Structure formats: C-alpha cells, structure tokens
Amino acid sequence: MQNSRSKILIVEDEAAIRQMVCLSLNQAGYHCIEAADTQEAQTKIVAEIPDLILLDWMLPGVSGVEYARRLRREKLTQNLPIIMLTARTEEEDKIRGLDSGADDYITKPFSTRELLARVKALLRRVSPLSAETLLEVEGLSLDPVTHRVTADGKTLTLGPTEFRLLHFFMSHPERVHTRERLLNGVWGDNVYVEERTVDVHIRRLRKILIPSGHERLIQTVRGAGYRFSAQS
Ligand code: CA
Image 1 (tube, rainbow, N blue to C red):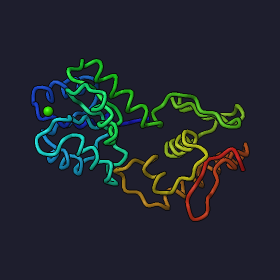
Image 2: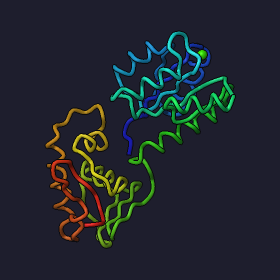
Image 3: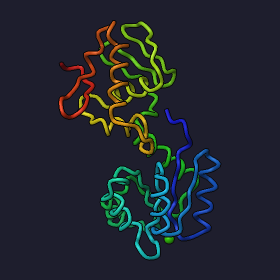
Image 4: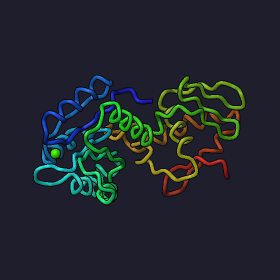
C-alpha cells in the first residue's frame, strides 16, 4: 500500500509540454516535479528520488538516451522506472531507447489519457506492494485490499510493519533478501532505519505465525538475510 502520492519527475525542455504533462499528473493525484534539462533533473533526483521519471529524448546538452544510461549505472537510480518521451517513431530508435534502460516509450504527440495509462501501468509493475491480488501460500493468505491475514482460515493480528514485511515476502518468494533489500522494500528507500530493526520485526512476525506453523516459511539464510519459501 502506498501512503503518499507517487512523485513523477518530468524532464522536458519544451515548457508548454512540460507544464501540460505536470498539470495532468497533478490532476490525476500524482505529485509532479519539473526539470528543463538533465542537469536540473539530477539536482532534483538527488534532493528527492522520484517514483518514476518521464524523460524526453531530445534535450539540450545530454540527451535523454544518454541520461537514461547514466541513471541505470548509478546505484541510487538503477531501479528508477523510466518512460521515454520522443517524437521519433522509427522502430530502430524505439529499440535504442529501450536499450538505454528505459522501461517504456511514448511517442509524441500523445494524449493525456495514454500518458496516464502508461504511468499507472509502470508504477503498478514496479511496485508489487501496491498490487491487489490475494496472496496465498500453504494455507497462509494475505489480502492486500482488506489487510486481512489468515492462517488456515483463522484471522491473524499483525502490526503495520509486520503486515508490509509479510506482504513483501509473499510477493517476492523463493529468493534471498538481504536486510538492506528488506529495508528498501518494506520501509522505503528514503527512511533511515538500522538493519537490526529488520531482525526485530522478523522475530515478531514469526511469533505471530508460530501457532499455525507458518513461521517455517520465513527462513534465515546465514550470512545473507532471509527467504520466504514453501520448500524447507
Ligand atoms: Ca525536447
């Protein structure tokens, strides 16, 4: 569940397009941040990492394609969702745009409706925590919409952090998560929390799952972190 409005950064040198896009995004409930070139974009990203970036291809100085490559190389922005905006329609250009690390591509002129649909789709794709699918593993079920968690049909009472932690585990099963990754995924990138906090909440979550035996699903991977797995 996302508590705050998603922040979208638009990098576009044409003021009219930039303002039109921002107006639509704000009206749709997003928080829009504007940048006229990649230098300004960089300053805004460092100040506050956005949830998604709309990046124009043709920019003065560093091009959108080159900037997308740079964003992918930096640790801070390597997973930042990018949609390229461009007047280019050639198939080859499209491939080049996606090769640079962009997640999606919109050709100008585009409608506000199309833009909003693409933004929404990409945000949904990259944030499994906001997904609305009911998750179920071996009798343990979690409903992201109602926040109801049940074990073999019995309702469990979880604190908000334990809920998010379990939600993260159930939507990313069968792989090892470091404490850092759990912090980013559950607490958010911009929050400073000590890594041992993760252990505290894992302990609480396991305790809640003990009566039904589901604590076995949360495995400690020595020296690495934790894994949520139906296989023991
Ligand atoms: Ca432009």
